Length: 563
Image 1 (cartoon, rainbow, N blue to C red):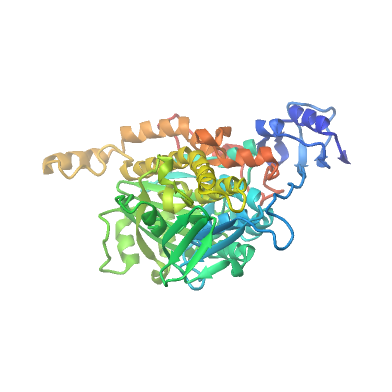
Image 2 (cartoon, rainbow, N blue to C red):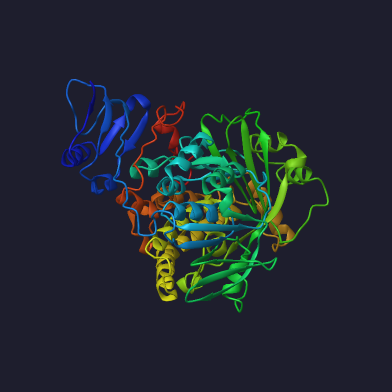
């Protein structure tokens, strides 16, 4: 029977405790509400919960057949802080160097908490550049807490990939090495599914929300000065901008970071590989994009990542191990065709669909993890995003970690009043660093670990013998490789991934419900504060219904030999 009802908070908690596990069998999806829902601080003014249930002979608290389940809990409006008053009341002013995803997300978060912001961006005009960016459930859950209207605009302009099969594949043979079920962290913790959106579109949405009047275009912060009344950002053209706080969100080669620590050696670290990237109109001959979201094709000293980005388009990245600073003497598509000439047809199909002129190349760097909170802040100045925790792209967490930092920093700045002393500001910034340092370093380490796996992968015994071997030894191993005996490293790697990958996905997505101070995600805090609504994006309701069953997401076969 269908009904709308308005329960008390105690009734709601009782209901959720009984239905914390349910299965929508007719949708072919397992859904599980997280423990955090039951532990959330439900207020007395929870107005409604809508449930449309298909009744069976009797109600079962363990297994509930349902046509659709959607829960909505409106939370109380936050009381405006003292700097949110009528015209003329002074507000805390935050100056942000860098108008990328992290800088603009911070600006929006601060605005929504009643602060004045001024973003200083190098480019004079935002133009389309780069391809799509992946935003996983932690990024979008945090974005919902920052600004739900912006999050909804992102949902209207994205392609959801988290409800499809994703994972690692053997580059040459094309079989699954490991499949990811990226839905589970979302279902367990009430988070949105992973999605991709064009970077230029995301920046456009952010700029519109922050307001062009709050962005200084064509400005480059090169230094700063500070005293007990505030901080002044000094620009390359000689102008300056004054505020209570300065945040360096100006990228991996941050000039603010250099000004903070002029004596420090550059923390940039070359990953060991360069990446070619492009997008293509996908012919979908060998891969069904209605079932597959993204695939990582593994090979020795190279790997290839492909993702559906909607509207019949695929984005891909081809990674190749080589020294930094290299250049191509030939057409990039020809170079890649040679690199991957003996790989499986599904992978090569992406290259064949790509126009040569759209292929770009760049070397991949990250930053040596700043595990000392003192590296994140100095006086009234703090760092955010790639300026302090740039990561390799193997987990798709560059933008996600910047958004998490933006939420966390805004929450600490909200505690300050206009005219706060340098000691007070420094205390708030140091708390931000303390809350973020373990989480950022952990995600950084996981990204590097997966990058190492991608590089050292060998499918069969004898494949790619080391060059230091004598010629006779290399010929011996080449002969052995013809028997297609699984490489011991591949067997062990698959066993380890089958035992650990779901925990890695849970940690990246939800932080395993750990407190922020010991490496958790800020999404948990946002849930407990009622700054976002717990959601469960059931395919067919909150996202497109896919022609998939639960079994399609599982590995088949004995661990170590599964496909």
